[in-house]
Image (cartoon, rainbow, N blue to C red):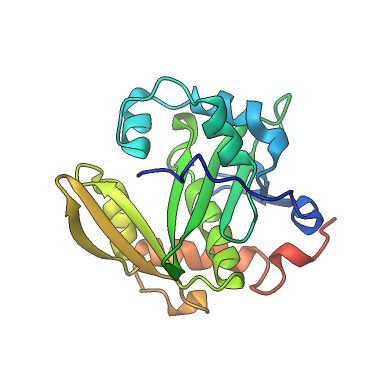
Length: 221
């Protein structure tokens, strides 16, 4: 999936976003801290990138990528929390609280209710539901900021992600060669999601988190 335009600069981090830290558990009981990404996460993002296999990097970025440039890291960590939002999952049991995953959206300039979305989880923690938790947080933030549809660009060989997006109610069409475009509606109420395995997991994750309208504007203990 193509990333955001690295040439676009973003304003300073708003204080309400700094205050949000959630303590949650993955499906297998793995403890996590979930919060918005911060500029201080630059080194953590680089380290997490190196936890991805070559295949995971290719499926995420649609090209072989050995390193993230300083410009890319700056753009991915210095965001405005409105048009560009990202949530990270951290491991509180290890020194330095390394990253386990990140989910982000970037609003489409000429379609203000649509945002391109992407989720990445380090290979060692696949299959634990971390991506679903991050997606739930991202969807709540998107709704808070007037976004009603997530758009993803996915390689047709990435059957797992395509199936998940279909189970979320996504419509899939060919975009360019082997790249598929998927538009997924974001319901105001998670109970309106399709009654599919992914939809049920998403609803369960959303119920464990805080409701729309309060994510970015309350201080959590």
